[in-house]
Every structure is written in structure tokens, then in C-alpha cells.
Amino acid sequence: MNLNRDGDTLMTLMGTTGIDFPGGTVDFIPEMKFIYGSDKERIPCYRVLDDNGQPIADHNFVQVSEEVAVKMYTDMVTLRSMDTIFYEAQRQGRISFYVTAIGEEAINVASAAALAMDDVVFPQYREAGVLLWRGFTLQEFANQLFSNKYDNGKGRQMPAHYGSNKHNYVTIASTIATQISHAVGAAYSLKMDKKDACAVTYFGDGGSSEGDFHAALNFAAVMEAPVIFICRNNGWAISTPISDQFRSDGVVVKGQAYGVRSIRVDGNDALAIFSAVQAARKMAVTEDRPILIEALTYRVGHHSTSDDSTKYRPANEIEWWRVARDPVARFRKWIENNGWWNDRAESELINNLRQRLLHTIQVAESVEKPPLADAFSDVYDIPPSNLREQEQWLKEIVKEQPQEYPANISV
Image (cartoon, rainbow, N blue to C red; front, side):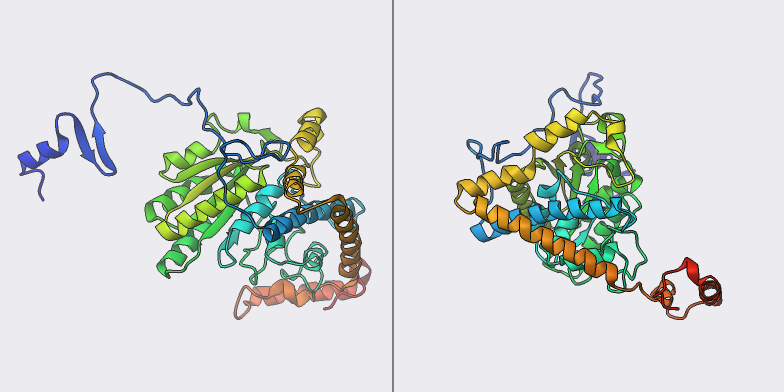
């Protein structure tokens, strides 16, 4: 069709009341009207349980079996116990770094419970609960933290940067938001291969300020990639509050701007997260579309062991969220009301977890480090000459200065 020569067709497309533009007809109006930067009415937040673990009237959520609910709760408690004991290990100087998920356990575990094992996860660094749900053992966590020879990453990554091919959990990278675009690429590949699976990526509110986030959402929307974007909006990007990050109504409206179906969910409500993620997965897989979930929560712990959050936020604010909005306590009340949990089961779980975690630390600490050769493998099929020279140089340094290296290090 040549619009330059077909005036009638051009007038039909332009019309007198609107223009037929890609995406639908855009109406004409005679008044100059700007779209305001933010609306007074904010996007509502989906919730199932109130702060006391009681279902809200007229709620709608996906029914959870006793088996799944109890596993969700025990994994949430396990994650919190891991964070407590491994954090203490870092403070004792036994590991160099650690990141906790205190206050965000529901997002971790409930979202994992709603996914399928074939779904590929691209985490940030506060999603250990997803890996825990998928079967990663406490010993495997400890091995990675201590960078011993049984660590999947062969000791080449920072502590708390887990990865597991077996569990479809892509290794964590410290760089902010790079995993978001990777997830979209994987999702597009799953679509092309006609797989009954989707990609899922997690990131914080700070990650949504990175260019990777915007490029990924736009690509996913245009190419209709089956990917779920889960934003943990915990109020803080290290020491930067969300009020200093963006003027928009959080992150959920950014999905809408890119043409991505989006929802805001109470991130401290395990049932709401489970229901939203399960619904999102169904839409992503069956309709080949991206979904954005903004989970409103709060980072109760410090950003990492390198941070002291009391320097930039009041202690009473942290304490209020820790007590009044605790996702673990809220979900416990719900399963107790259903007769699926009691004080005796709680006591046995806590005592058992502490013993197991302390044992895993002792074991991981006693295992020797990976051989030095592993620092130079897995990148090139045939190592280039400069890499071989660096390896030889390092071996000579170790031999010359053995006192500077662990006695059991292998050269």
C-alpha cells in the first residue's frame, strides 16, 4: 500500500477523531493536556493475610495443601536460621562476607513454591530461599560460603553468591541488574524451543534504576518472552531510600509503561506471593508474555556484613517492621490456625536446625580449598599463553612464600 499516492487510504487511517497507530487507535482531543508525573491515587497492593495471619474478607488466593504450607514455613524458618548463624560466622572472621534475607523470607520461599523446577531462576543475592526450596542442602550452602573444594563455583566467587545447574539456579553476580536481561534472553530461548517453562528473575528496587531493567522489560514486551520479573521493593538500595531513587509510584507502574502486565503484592504475605507468582507463571507460559511483580517488603537486616544500616535509618523503624510485619510469624499463625503446626514442632525444628547448621560449618571449614589450577579453568578450551604464564607465576609465588598461603593449598 502506497500512502503517498492513496490519499483516501491516508485519510481513512488518520480519520477525523483519531489516528490508527500501531497498538490501537489514538483519539484526538482539542485541549492541550499533559500526563502528570505521578497520580494521587496509588496502585493498590494485593494481600491475603493481615498482620495477625487472619484471612482478609473477600480474599481470593490459590489453595495450598498442608504439605506445601508446612514446607513453606519450615524453609522460611530454615532461611532465617541460616542467616543468623552464617552472619555470626562472618562476624567471627570465619567467612569474609554474607548477605541476609531477614524480613524477605516470604518472597523467597513462597515464590519458589509457586514455580516449576524447569523454570530457570536468575537471582540477585538475597534469594537463597529459592535455592533452599529446590533442594540445595545446608552443606552445599556452607561449602560455597567457605569456598572449599566442594563448592560448585570452585571457590572463585564471593560468599553468598550461589549457583547450581542441577537446580536451574544461575550463579549470582555482584553486578546490579545484569541478571534481568539475561533472564529475558533465556525466556526467549525457552519460547523458541517451545518449552513448558519460563525464566524468573529477582532484583531490588535499586536494580530498577539500572539500564538493564529498562532494556529487559522493553525487549520482553516486544518479543513476548515468558519471563517473570520479581522486584523486592524493600525500601532501600543500600543506604538510598526509594524516595531518592524515583518519583514514580514504585516499580509496578514501570511495567505498565512498557506494556508488561503487572501487579503489586504484599511481600510479607506468603499466601499472596504464592498466589500471584503461580498466576503469573500460568500467564507467562500459556500466553507467552512477561509479567512484573512488585513485592512491597522491608529489609530488616543490614544490606550486607559490610553495612551498618543504623547509620542511615532509625532503629525503631527497623524494629517495628521486624515485630509488626514479620512474614514468618504471620504465616506461622495461619498454619497454626489450620491445625498444621504447634509449639512442639517449632521447638524441634529450631533445635535441629541449629545443630545441623553448626555441623555444616565445622565440616565445610575442615575441607581443603580447591586446587590453584581451578582458578584458571573453565573459561578457555585451550588456555592462552598469557594465562598459562600467570598460573606458573602464581605457583612459584606459593612455593617461595608458603607461609602466606594455607598449608593444604594444592599447587
